[in-house]
Length: 232
Length: 405
Image (cartoon, rainbow over all chains, first blue to last red; front, side, top):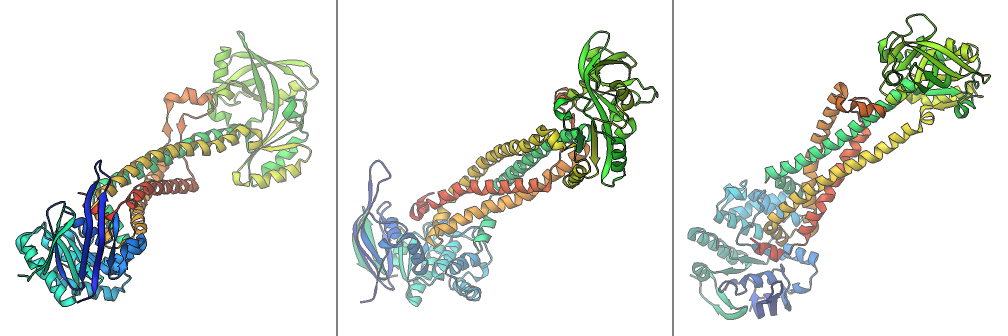
């Protein structure tokens, strides 16, 4: 048995901003080990994004606790949480992933700069990451000059920049064509295998689900099923 | 890199940025112009009063200021004047005899102050010769010439060469009268003075008052450089320790008040202009923040803390201001330079302005310090305006921001 990297206990989240409170998550238990490649699936509104936000410390659960790499992030104060995210968690969103005014090099370098990595090392790491996602030639392109798939690959490279233990991806292939989606998944799977980075991603896409080794299904904010599978 | 992001962010929506920059430019220009126009208006009034009426320094018998009686004289003024006139710091010095009395035409009478002047010396001071609209400046050689203002001439219903009788008390408290012929009609930039001041030869008035030619009621000294006023007045006080020596600010405290109130009023007006600018910046920057909610959420998610986000929004406003300020300053400076040289003719208001002692041609003027102050006010206003939009960015929750479309 590997090291536990994500441990969520009784996590519930109720949104009270609306007239009728919405229970997005109800007593969710989740246990993910280091190096897993997990797909979070379920219909719209089932709580996938909410759960990812709780694990990433972007939002606070109404009740329950979340441990990431042994740290109870639900107890961390805002600035500590931001720092924790910076050091340990990489994010890939469905869209609006990149800073539009920065080039691929600068987008990736920005995270490294926040981590106070020296310029020389930064440059080296940026090149390395872009090479890994196959976009060396787009180093000086701004997001507007990249296709959707390329933008998501830069986003993955950016998420990897800080050498995080986990990458959380919220429907990373939702806006991509099948070829780009498959390409992105291959890159993610390769990084998972070679660098032992834990991937947890939400998706609707059956082809993406087939690539995962573990599939957790959420229905109405509850874990409906949790199955290991052999990726295709 | 935050500086780089902020700089590039402002060029994402060029139209919006140019609207903000344009507001800053117009706000700054308008503030500078209003300050310069108002100062030009008042400065003209002050210069007119100092150069044409008061001079920089006046010396009187200590009793004269309160009593206004011609018997309170300074003696030996002719020798003092010749000393002063030789001084390098003095532009011009003159002695005057003054009497309060009545002027009568065939139809009406009016109260006046009669100035007995030395025509040659007063060319550089009262400058009556430049203001004459009819007649010639003491050209006839006759000693019964009187020069009156156009407004008084209208009131008395008299013309050039008309005869008037001036009545006042001499130094022995006897009522004396003198018949004069109007040698010239003048129109200065101060209509209120035009109605009460009349000018005759000093020698003529001295004879009527029974004063000696070396005696005068007033010594007026116009300096070459006003900045030397404080040191020179000390010297004059030592020279004439028994007399009352006053500078123009003592003589016309209302003018000093004008300068003080100028600062207050014009800064209030500038404040109102800048307040309007505030709303423009708040609105635009808020729009810019609200448009980027998802992006700001993403920045927070990847590790940019809220302090840095706040700083980034403030930086964006600072950059826009730093672009707008020099442009506004330059246009403002250029406007003041051009209009300060050629003047703004507001002739349609001239009658009203002249009655308050203002000229109908305004030469806007502003000193360097005021430019700096206005630019600083503009910068502070812009940064204060950015606080609310930046604060709104701080209130964002990363998860909610990312969810927003």
